[in-house]
Image (cartoon, rainbow, N blue to C red; front, side):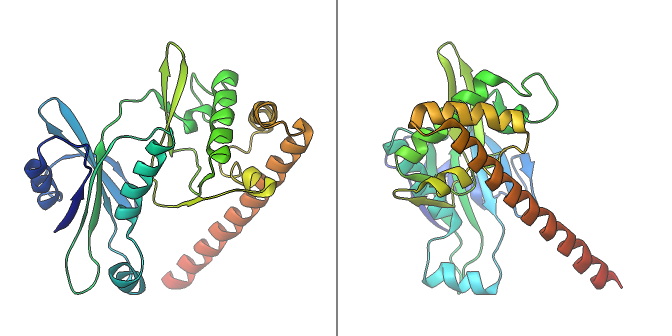
Length: 252
């Protein structure tokens, strides 16, 4: 198994290699998904988070082997780039890639972060739903990303971990393999909010905070986010209907 470790990581590398070799039978499942899975491992007092990426289809097996970086490598590289730009993410440790004729399994390893909530808790039932202070702080954080030329393509409810502290809130990005870097125009910045919340009151809070930070007109920001959100919702629901039809045809 090919692997690369962060220069700053001083922990037990052999133990982490053993975790990867025994990923299927060891570790504690943390988040099972259709595409990928996460497991937690302990090394002494340290908790390690290992993300296993689903083996890609044939075309991507060839692409990742010869032409482009894997999701694991991109997660590792982008984590370092975020930290270099003062943006928080759980500390990157290593990435692993299976060495076969074509691309196979891959893993991204980071330190596990104990967090208080994700952005999702701001939009679902619970004690944090609609929290104006956190929503405003999140919008300011998003402006910081944009101002630094960081376009987080998976800026969605589960991909920002929030830590509450005495000074306010710290935001940590996860699921890092899809990012672009460089200047963004107004439309691209506003579209980056599209997957977060369709609740107009949430959008109003974020628009006000983003406008204040950026100097843009508040109403212009609000309308642009609403339009981007509506467009995303329409595309999402059309895609879901198509998936249901395809499943029905397969069963028929």
